[in-house]
Image (tube, rainbow, N blue to C red; front, side, top):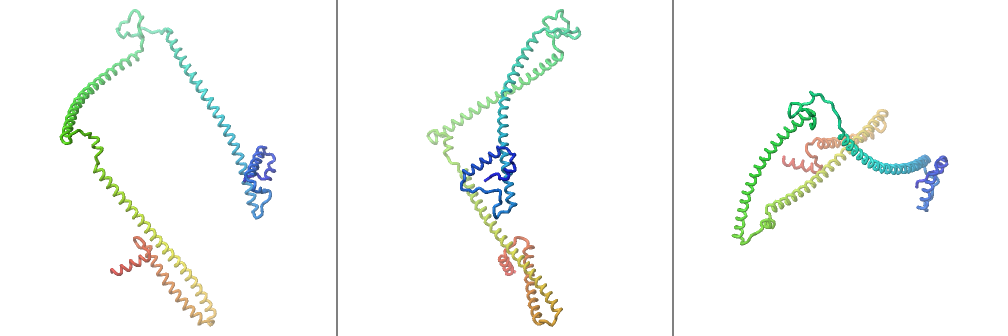
Length: 359
């Protein structure tokens, strides 16, 4: 349940009435959803609970309520903005339609204006040396019926005429080459048709000679079995099965080697632990010996026989432990420095025995 604490509500008396209404709605929905739950009094800390944790929980609940209220406000604002955006989008579409219609009308008006302007006669003053007659160098007596062109435009039109003439010649040459190629291909086609007709006649003759009737070769080829393809499929199936078996055996070998590696690592770890225990035992025994020697130095006449016996026993124990530590150190050195794969102890002993037998 999420409820706003009573003391928080009392402290925030200046809050909006909408927050109180939302809290009452939440509490009423909770009461209707689960009548068996008891409402907790958040003004007092329940027994067995840390007050600091209780206050922290109340603060977090208050923050969560504030965040939910802010989220609701943001959702309302988002819905309002979405509605406004939809309305503006519709207005934009309407304005775009009006703008397109206006631009179309403006273009039509521009065309009409240009047409009207073209109908207006405009007088352009020209000097005599600016006018050259294209057909005849002599200037005509009357300028009626003549068209005035810019010299640059006339030169550009002449260049375009020459370019089109060259392109026409190239197109005609290409057309002649294509026509010759078509004639050659047509002759080859006729020759191939004659060859195909002769082969068909020969095929029909062979069918009538051997089978006594004509047979559709396409249907015959569809009914026959391609032995080479079937053999290749069977070979592919056998190879795939062999590869799967080989992969399975390799996976099993990998698992076995992993198990052996795990055993070797466990054995190595156990030996290292044993070596550490022996080292600690050695240090403890050396400390005991030092203490005993110090006590004997202080009072050499007290329990001399017992101390000598204890010293001998401890010396024997230290000697045996040193031998065992040396043996373990040699085994660890062999395992860490040996080239190749590390074998388990029983396999290593078997290999050493077989090596001794061969030697």
